[in-house]
Length: 314
Length: 187
Image (cartoon, rainbow over all chains, first blue to last red; front, top):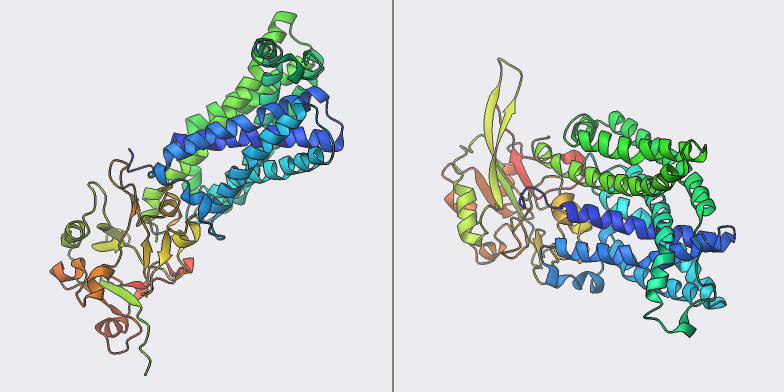
């Protein structure tokens, strides 16, 4: 299949991981700038932001057909290429995110903290939008050449970033205990544990429900936009009525959006007893993460399968 | 008189093309193209509504656009315009990301496998042969004489005579301004 698909699942994983990082970076830095978000959310977002994108970059390099040449993209730039801009952002973003995570971890304040926070926000937005723009800049492809893809990927990045923060916060307390064995005592922050309790999880769930609703709205807009384009029948055939339609409707819409939305709302209405509630608070963010990956997978592969038809489209 | 800059182009006459695949094979041999990858290939077109249908073959390869989406998309400028107006790939700059393959609206580039060079294989218009005054491999081997290559800036060249026979660019609505034209099939 190597000759049929130019880009494969590694690209979908990379777009998903870049979105995760961008989402948690944006949430963390916005929280700090407006000074509204809970301290714990900001911390977890800052700690987690650098790592998914680094893993994603590894996937990206593995996907290249000439991986040993990958450094050339960091030396040679082409201003008309979206990927060239993206390479620049993806070079700077993990560095800035690591610096910001360090500043947050050791509670360093002052001008450098302010600069890093703004840098984190700007680069986070850039990476989050770039992931979709990379695809929507390809105007030959009826599935990808749609600017709503960029919006959709950004909204999904915020949604999955939020869920990464929920999951990360839940396991942070245990992990920190484990890490204490390796890091000298004087380097650790004052507060021993983040105490990521049920209240903060519920507050984040409320925000996540809103973002999921926005995402559903953007997906509807995308489908309508396809239906209005002259070549849109190919896009509809590739992801909505045929091709990857099962993954789209069951994986993304049902399991990735509707199910976490319903479970989240029921959880906030206190419909469950305590043990179920604990389970739901884990299952809900995991479902959103799953949906976020399926979204990238469907869009990437959906775009690839229209190419053979395109050759004969005159 | 200053020497005029060359602009290589190609015209394929679809009325003469018989679909024998000789150009594909000659190209593979000349350019040492890896297995399962083609720089030029034959596609079969169907036109019309039953019962008035026709079927014809078409030699399909890079159109050497003057406003090429692949050159715009390439992150490292490995895809570039040569001094003769054709589009080519610099192997030393290429990272094999496949973005040019996806950006091409004509779908004429193909990634060669990682086990080979991993380059986006595409028609180079055999500029290495044209430089030496030879014709491209596909043109020399074409049994029907359906292909002509030449300098579009030279009014006396064979290709400019063919241009007058009703040659058109493929998908002109894309605004890619190809240097390669076809003479459409007439029933």
